[in-house]
Amino acid sequence: MTIQQILYAIVIAEKGSINKAAETLYISQPSLTSAVQELEKSIGIQIFNRSGRGVTLTNDGREFLLYARQVYSQYENLENRYSNKEQIKKKFAVSTQHYSFAIKAYVEMVKKFDTAEYEFAIMEERTREVISDVANIRSEIGILYLSDFNRSAITKILRTNNLEFHHLIDCQAYVYIYKDHPLAKRKSIRLDQLYDYPCLQFDQGDDVSFYFAEEILSTNEYPRIIRANDRATMLNLMVGLNGYTLCSGIICEELNGDDYVAIPYKGDENNPNAYMEIGYITKENSVLSEVGAMYIEELKKYLSTVKTARRKKNQKTEVK
Image (cartoon, rainbow, N blue to C red; front, side):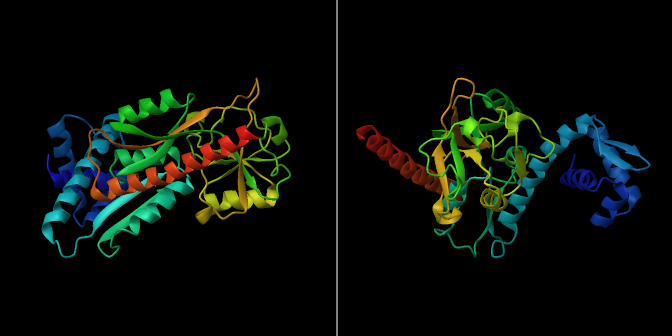
């Protein structure tokens, strides 16, 4: 098995066609076919199913491609590091569920580095994509949450992908709404008070499982649901339709603005509150890069201010 053969397999899988892959790689179709056949023979599995409509991955092929992409990514990093240092930019990427505090920490981290020397990237994505990005080394760090409901399923997926979860903060559910919402002045909000308003949820694509929902209490019954795929749209729906979402309540006003409020969710016998454990994922036994360590430091610093503010607010409430 060679790096070149690994690259061939990756490109064929991406193009879904040996002919298209051959054009991309600037080699002849027979040469590419022969190289892949040699690869399959050397590793003892069939990577692709071939038909007149193109190629698809076999089950063995999917597993092979998972490792192949990791190997090729590491090869590219090695080549970049030691080929032409003057032209190489260091890379750092984070994938996250839709958390404004994750963006805020990223901003503070980037300020400490020369952006001319780095290729920085941060992606707000679906839960499955956050996991996939870190598993395939597209991102060094992923931000997501666990709860009593999804913990077993998500932990199993992380373990299968050789990923580790690291705790950052625990928090209960909050109702996030526009400041002029009819319920915006309440000290807490019950689920039955929300029935007349649309529940806004981040779309998870084909992963319709409740386990991948970004919103805590995703198994509750919501008579009105609207799905969106980005934070800006979600905020617009809060304004235009009096929509709401259930979240951690950790909102960065600097980025989201102060036109929105997070109000504690008040559970009842049928719809109890629940804890979110927000954390970050990395490859197992990996050591964070300098940039990665700085990003986690900024995350912890910001979340520490949130803990302090909530503690002071609770103390004031107890005094009253």
